Image (cartoon, rainbow, N blue to C red):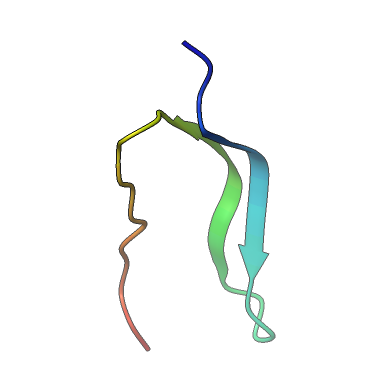
Length: 41
């Protein structure tokens, strides 16, 4: 079965240089939920 959503090589850097995500890839199958959790702040 094909994934409903596919994320490849995600990167998120904040203005102060902190890397929240660095080359993250994942698939979310149909009917599934996915969350990315981390420190707030």
